[in-house]
Image (cartoon, rainbow, N blue to C red; front, side, top):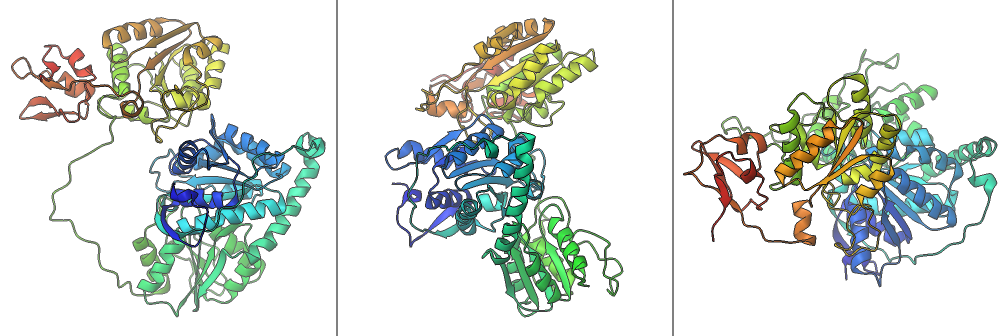
Length: 632
């Protein structure tokens, strides 16, 4: 049996942060879970999905990969309104997609515990922005919890369910990449029983948000916020540790760096730390008492100066004249010796223990005794290793065919997925990208604003997520572009999760497969073609016809992701080799395709047989037919 399903408590287990969150949800008795996968939160739904499939006799909760985050939240909201304890997970930009239902769900409330997990990504390890989702708590009026590590994340999700059930309101749990992907010894408690079915009690004057109802619901939300302020003052996750005349206020993973820095700087009797695990609503009375007890305050928070601004406001309202520094300039107390406080932190990117330690040393005039960074001045520069599409990735073949036909003159809107790597040379087929689904909608804008050919690219999972409405808009408004749907049969970028277009029989899932071509024809697209991109000549012919069509045309480039195919449809293909006697060193295979299985040695193109999966793309484009399968 999987350790996460252990029914008893009392032991510690080394868990990934996302696994600890799953265990916390199980200990809370979660009955209903929805998501759209996105790094750094992906392992949460992946674990819930795996447990459900591998232990159907022991798992009682319902779980689904929803079409997108808005759908996931609305589905979970319905279950919570009926009376089931629910969990909805997504990454930070996913909450933008779910923001529409979120704001009104805060008014409506729930009839059972509901936690909405949003995973932020400071330093943009796998995201298009690094927005700070603490703002969503303030905008929605919902409480927010911020764990500093896996063990605390497990406890916080249970605490979140408790608050939600007490006040009948959703609770936001904000993690960051370092919390989601850290490992820690996590103590287990007993699993709670799971309520799997409920009965919805009709109350239209609470659940149907016409203006007359919503006016009252807004007042309800304001009353709940007053209750939450009292809860925040007493929260076990809002703590003061240490003693001294200098103060540090922090939250999230930064709290770990602060505690390490206090020890490293030998400042245990000099620095007092206020850690805010329940970061909204703020415990204003506790904060005011803390500010009065110190002579100077450094705020350590990743991304935006949200706490710093709030602390300055609380100090102003309470007549507390203490310097509060961090990221912002100005607003110095009248009697402060600092005419303008220095800025110790950036508003961009994640922090490190070294950075926090040095900032605290600079702020409080302490000597940083840490070892200097290891000098690499005498080391040669490491070879460049840019991200690349995998060996045999069918996206490369699709891009090759399009670029051979249209070159660099066409506009290529792209989207969120593995195929965004088409941005890089030698492919260079990504010109514009905002968010999930934007390739379809922005293509319409480009086609109307210019006379250039427009070919946009979107993945199959992303198309179901948010490309369908853009395509409907394009058909309705008579736009003129070609949409290429890169259908690799899975949600490849985030870990091969299923989506509505996945062949569910191949993965042993009970969900229903929705094929792309009839769906697209049903949207009104007249010119729809399905190609096999690894058949280069026929693919180019089909793409050429699609691009020549006046209006909206769609090409479905259908070939399994090779990594996914190893699991669901394994097949043996011979690797290829370059026959040097026939090779004229045109280097088309290198300069136009750049498969990572290929390399150049002494001016000669070669193929690493251990990496080559035998897709034969390079063999089809070699002008000398010098690339052939390896002989036995």
